[in-house]
Length: 183
Image (tube, rainbow, N blue to C red):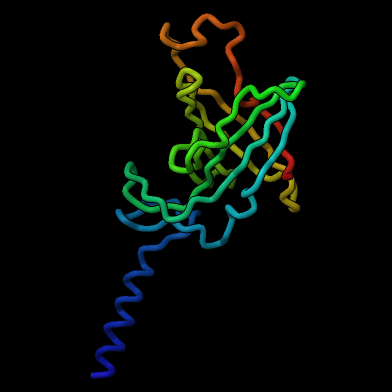
């Protein structure tokens, strides 16, 4: 009887762990599986980063979210979210979404890219006429104290109901390319 119980326990533990995959899984992932940061790769990105561009300073804080269900892909995943504050030269706040709840960020990760090992993020800003784009970040050195940031803005259709419809130039909340330093 004891051996049967141990066998059942062993089989159950194997079937539970068989549904967990590392973040760098680039094959089909079954429904309800867990794409887990088993190598703690996202931990190095966590924290506040600072950069300066076009007379503006950006502070962006990355935070790791664990075991979050993705209803589009139908599996659980660990990923980063980003919240930022942008200041002008005089310290005036231009953009600030640092108080948004973690389940509604404007920047969230979509994973490590197989092509070049860079981390890919999505940006959607409903407060800026639904501006969208993707962001690619990667470390510039083994010390992991600086990040290379590249933002590619999506093709956005600005309609007349947008508060910035006739604003020239259109407000830019994020830099196109910048080096961020960990604070």
